[in-house]
Image 1 (cartoon, rainbow, N blue to C red):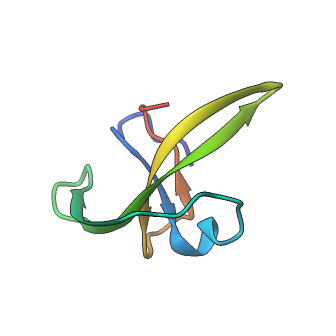
Image 2 (tube, rainbow, N blue to C red):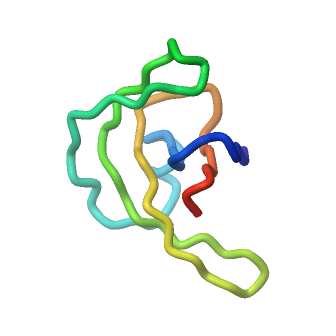
Length: 77
């Protein structure tokens, strides 16, 4: 899902497990979502390569245990 109001990009651990990626360094952080009430525990951060047409773009993505969708592409890309 693309969320232009999100300042960061997020991926669930389940979705990340299907991708090739580097080791996820642990993190003890919390992200507050745009509704002002929902909090997500950040498990870590990983750099992924996104491909649009034939252009690859690196993106730092915050890893969470669960959320309503597997991936949120925020405005940080």
